[in-house]
Image (tube, rainbow, N blue to C red; front, side, top):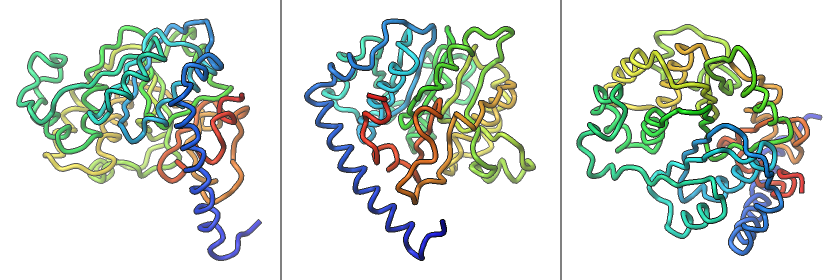
Length: 308
């Protein structure tokens, strides 16, 4: 049904307010009883994969809900490395590590003091240290780019943003782990062409299945990385919002990564102005709650997401 003028904006304001209230309730629940939440959703079985995420002080509760949803619908990973942007408090770190026995927070490098990456990174990254250092010093996404590229991939590894939640169809990850022959890796496709650095778009025509860097599943270490880092150098120390995502788009295309189906791996903001949801937990594997729909992450309480 068509909305009246201004109705969508009013609906979003109401749902944002409701989301803030639910987020505060979840924060209180985490503060007094995260251990009990973990016990409610925990599965005994360990899944043979690792997870890496990147987050901050401000999205601590999104990160906690993301971890809970993973163990609820997928299982316990061998290891979860949480790369901090440097703003997490010691209390937050202690809470994460004491309640999730598989999770370790990496506080990373002190970028204000870093002048060289020699001895601190993979050898293949060293020729690009000036560019990586500059980006990391200027923007959190620069830190994310470095930490993920430098992450050792010894087991199948999932790289995700903190605003990713898992749902009932996420058990497809177990099928991906056992498929033969294995793809090099998988990624969540963006909904449409365009969320890329303008300098990349100026050189390339529109492509189907653009990479969203919020969800990348690597079966093995990245190969053919030099060409993508050479492209990164062409930014010449100037960056746009999607500069980091563009490096991954370039890298994953060069490594023949496969797109996951957008029917269950959801990156869709079509319900941002609605009270209702486009998808229920029973219909999804994963949803990426990007900025336009972040309020939808909290409009329903955590029990809805975790099917409790």
